[in-house]
Image (tube, rainbow, N blue to C red; front, top):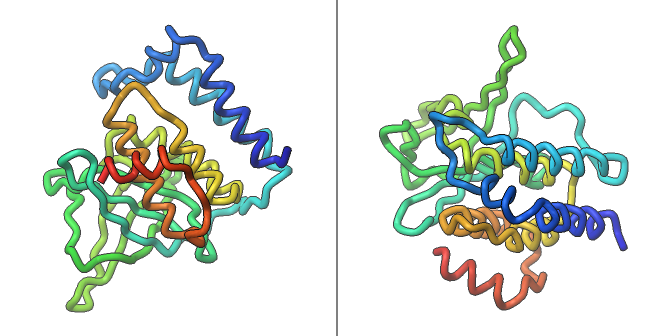
Length: 222
């Protein structure tokens, strides 16, 4: 079994063996007033450590460039308009930010915007912030600050997990299959995951077979 297959199996086994009661608590909708519950924090920590343990077996870029090229992928999550910002390193997906296209949260993008850059900032205390910049039709630079702070923290936590896998250069077809196999109790998260998989699929050769069930899920999520 290859390292990719082993890591995929390990992640799925961890979720399966976490325990139904604890898993239900971990997957409860995120409450910003309460914060992350201990079950969710425990599960995310275990998965993060498992991914980290495989670092010697994958090509890893230790230092993220300050600026990454970015593709903007828009999709539907139920009846809401969503957007994925896919940071690219050498043309390969390196990180992903996703959330609702909401004018009140400042995520208002012209329809013509499909590319830009994700800029990483770090303050003197080590706090990170990621901004999206693009050039509008008139040639003016526009910046959307704090991508990670503008989106629902529940989706942000899952997006961080997916970004961690991408940085280990796991083949995209395996990443997509892994994302598609994470059938969670929250239907909104499932639809969101399908949207993420659809955003990543554009970077594959198009020759991979993801299975009929997964293709149906993608169609239903649109």
